[in-house]
Image (tube, rainbow, N blue to C red; front, side, top):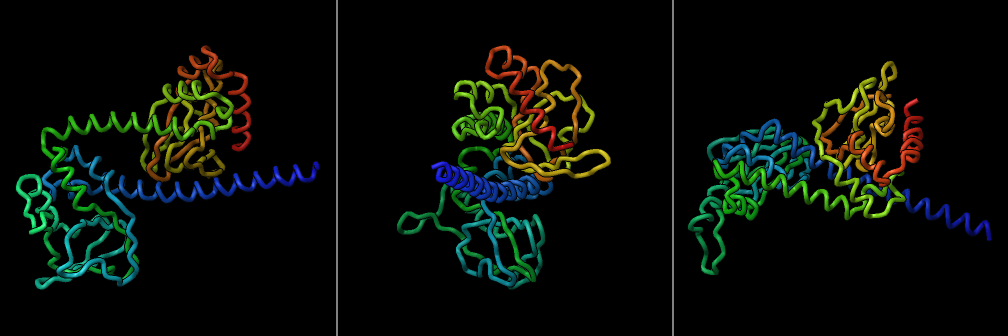
Length: 330
């Protein structure tokens, strides 16, 4: 009987490990896509703003809507002449060759092509051209393109998305800033609700046995913060003022005179020395550096003290959890 129970416990443990590996793989793919969007936003979004005749304030919203990643094998055709121009593309990896009647050119990372649909999307906001069945007439391609010499990865935007942005007013100069701020507030609220519904905190050891009411209070006490690749989020020997839960992204854990110890990604935590709520001058035991664009929920020591005072969190459990994490760095 005991052997059978032990077998089922091991089986359940293996299932949980498999689910975690699958989830991590999916999250890594999503993190890669998000990272490419943000790299384009930082490095080249002004190109897109100029093409769309749009306010640069609206570019974060536009870049967040980019779909992908579209994979094209070496020397494969992306689109041909006379194909329907219903997508616009941004190169994230590899080179694309464009051949037309007048010239031939090679495009590289963050170059934009397939822009024929922009004029049609602008027109759709006023008097769109329609065919006999009432469908919007899209232009056709004037050249053909293929992956030149290497495999190619592309972000893309389709015609319906672009029409929505023009009709919503998000691209209009002057209106863009107000609409962008509203969208940020809505996005933050949506992220908090998703975090609550996904039970993200229940995957963190110190929070896993708390009821939903307490978990919601903790989430409402957190602040979403974002970091770029190469940013030091915390540095060894600095004051430990905040505790972090990674929502998406990846970070390296570094120690002086040792180097990289490990990496952490979505649903992992760091900054555990901030959990010593009664120790006013707790110091960091390691540095944390973002390797890709990373979003975290940050819980400050002052908020932690309030949560302990309100009996949402137990100081004893916080210290036990802190000790278990700290041993991984020593």
